[in-house]
Image (cartoon, rainbow, N blue to C red; front, side):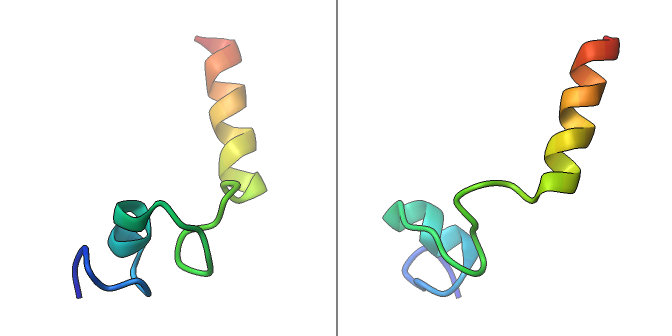
Length: 41
């Protein structure tokens, strides 16, 4: 399991693809938290 493994997040980043282990959009809960943190800072 490493960069050559297409099923892992690291492999997806290396290949530039998206899927189950690396979603194209970050999940909404963490995205909302990051946006809220940006506003307050």
